[in-house]
Structures are given as structure tokens and as C-alpha cells.
Length: 350
Image (cartoon, rainbow, N blue to C red; front, side, top):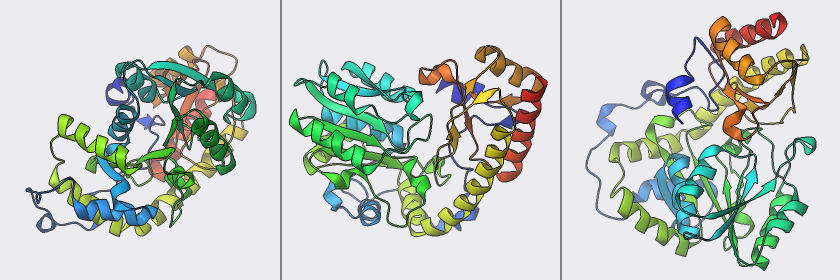
């Protein structure tokens, strides 16, 4: 997060994993639609209902949060206690691992090997799980590779978890980039076993309103409400109102962002196919790829991109694979085109 906030900026930026930001003007929002003071209650009922309707779940299964990162924190804290055993995919998104460390979990890992295009190694997961396991944690789409975990695999993970009385947490924030009008969630597979986290941040370019949520069984949601009381008190009401407005306009936002991402991914693939220095798995969805740097040290590659080409990518060390880099193409098509031209030039000259 320090890298993302302080060291990822560059003239040409391929370090972001989310789509280009939507403004209030693009949302068609005026200041008259916003209020500062919320009505009394637990959460903001219109926002809770909007989330529940989109994902076709009972409203008592929705716990709003400030973005996916806070949703993950609440979900992890609600499902396990310090000292409990938690299984986390490897490689993974750093905040899932670091939050679990902060919460004092006994962390075990299961593999998503590069040789299988980062699919979950079910055999390894079954070797690692035990009667002490409280939670299994994965991202779908996978961060940092955008690999999609199939429903059949999720079902098998859920059945494995149920046998030992564990739950499965699925971070689904990048799954929104399938652009479904009625998105499927792992939560639907078995609400007693699965819970999912998500937000309007990555796919829709609405990071600033911090509209995230957890879908979970009602008893988990109740625990999360108590955690929110402890950490937050109440959400910022203007952001809640903006969240409701965004859900009303999500189809229009999706159409803009899908068209943008389709074109950006087409340009990225052309660049990757034209060179041999970056060995890559091509995902069918998502903003990011995670290629291996061939022929030079990845740290030197990243440093030279910054110093010689004013280009930023994310070092793979943040995702437990330092021989790789993460490239994201969610920005405006004009900015992504210029950045990819720099990347192509850099790879050719290096």
C-alpha cells in the first residue's frame, strides 16, 4: 500500500489494477442530492437493499464496509480468532496475508502454481487443511494474475471446508470485470460455508466513495456490525448516498468501462505477443497480467522502466514472486496506449 500510494506514480502508469476513475460529473450527481447526517439505524437501509438486490441475497446477509480491504478485514476478524488456523492461497494479494498476520492467525498456505496458469491446487489444499482450520481464503479473479476460478473448483473447496467445519472467504472485487448484469457470487453456492467481499472500486472506477460489502450468513453479518461499531461508528453518509446513486447507474458505468477495458486488453496482448522478454499467462478477464521477466533481473527491469522510460509497473515481490511484475491496463485508453508504447520500446531496447 505504501508503494501504491507513494511510489507508483509515473508519467506512464501501468501499476494500477482498477479501472479509470469516474467523476461526480460523469455520474450526473449534484450537491443537492447529498446530505451529511444519516438517519438512525444499523447501516444505511437503501444502500444495504441495493447491494442485496443486485446479488439476489436477503438484506440480512449484507454488511457494507469501506471498500474491499475493510470488508476483508471485517470478514477475516468475524470468522476466526487469534491462534486459529487459516489457509491462504499462494501467491496472494499482500493485504490478505498481512491482515491475517495482524489478527494473529496461524497461517498455512496452499498453492496456485504458474504451470497450471494459477489455478487452485486442490490436492495441495486438501493436504494442508485440518480439523483446526477455520477459514480458507482466495481471490477470484486472482490477484495478481486475473485467473478465474471455476464454479466446479469453488464447489469442491466448499465441500472440503464443510467436512472440517471451516468457511471459505472469496474476494470477488475483480470478478466484477466479467460485467454480468446479475453477477454470480461464491456466496450463492452455500451461504453457510461461503462468504464474499466486493466493492465498486476496481471495475467501476469509484474508489473514492469507498463502497464495499461482505455477503455472509446472518450470524457473521451480526459479528461484522459489532466490529464496525468498534472501528468506525458510522459510515460517511454522503458516500452512502453516492453508493446508492452508483448502483442505480451501474449498467451505464459498466458499458463505458467494458468498452475501455476490451480495447486496452487488445493493445496489451499485441505488445506481449510481439516480444520474448516477458513470459505471460493470458487471462480471459481482468485488468492485470503477471509476466515473468526473462534475461535480466526483475528489480533492475523495474528500476530502469522508472528511470529511463518514466513507466511504472508493480514489482512481483509484493505478490510473493519477485521474478515477475504486475501490469495493469485499466486506465483511459489514451494513457494506456502511451504507456504500452513505452513498455514496448523499453523491452526492445533492453
